[in-house]
Image (tube, rainbow, N blue to C red):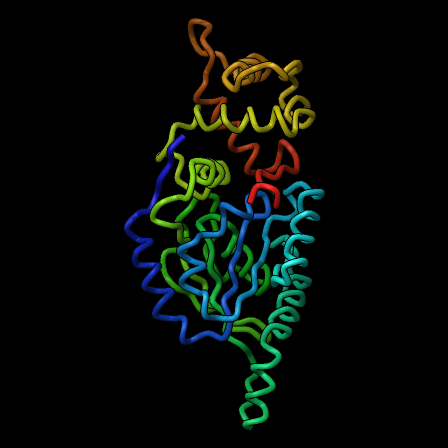
Amino acid sequence: MNIQWFPGHMTKTRRLIEENLRLVDICIEIADARLIISSRSPLLSDLIKNKPQLLIINKSDIADDAVNKEWMQWFKERKQNALFVNSRDGGKLLNKVTDEIHKILAEKIKAKEEKGIVSKSVRAMVTGIPNVGKSTFINNISGRKSAKTGDRPGVTTGKQWITVPGIELLDTPGILSPKFLSETQGEHLAMSGAVRDAVFDTAELSCILLEFLRDNYSGLLCTRFKITDTADLKGYEIMEKICKSRGFIVRGGDFDYDRASAIILDEFRSAKIGRISLERPSDI
C-alpha cells in the first residue's frame, strides 16, 4: 500500500528546526516504541546530526515488552543514547531525562565551568514525527499543560519554549520525510496515527494490520474481537468476522467495513487490543 504525506507546513518546520539548532545544547528525538524504525525520520536525523542527541523511545508501556527488551539490547550494543519511557510518568520522567542529558553533556558542561561559565539549565529541542507524543512528553515532564496535545497529527504548529527544572525545552511541530523509504514504513506510520486518515484507504490498511496481528498476535486479536479460527483467513475475512462479532451490519445485511476499519485502527492506537510492536531489531 503506497502512502505518502508531506503537507506544506512541514517545509516550514524544517526551516524552523534549522534556524533554531544554534540556540540549543542537545536535541531530544521522540520515537514510537511500537515502530522504532519507521518513526525515526531520515530527514530529521540529517537535520540534527551535528548536535548531541538523546533518543526517547515513547509509548513503551503499550509496546510488546519482549520486543522492548530486544531494542534495549540493540541500542546498548551500539552504545546509542536511548531512553525507554512512558510519557505519562510525570516527575519520574523529568529525573530520568535530566540525568541522561547531563551524562551526554558532561564534557561540554565541564569545559564551560573551567572557563567560568556556569549555566543553571541546558536548552533542548524536542523533535519527532507527528503524533508521537512530543507535547504529552513536555506536559508531563513539566507537570503542567504547557504544550497542545491531540490524538491527530499536526496539533503543534509552531515553536514553543517551556521551562522545567534544569532544562529549557523547545517544542517543535512533527516532521516526516518528503518520501517514505518503503511501503511498510508508510503503512506503519499510518497505523500509528502519524499520517492523517484522510490520506489513505482505512479499510485496506486495517486489513494489512489484521494480517500482521493474525501472524504475530493472534491471541490478542481473537480475545479482543471475540473471534476464532483466523489462521488461514485473509485480512478482509477477519474483518468480516469482526463485523459479525461487533454487530457492524448496515441496511440490507451488508458489513459496515468503514466502521470496522475505524474501530480496528482506533483500538490498535489506544492499545485496547493489547501491547503490540510492529517492528523489531531483526527488521533492520
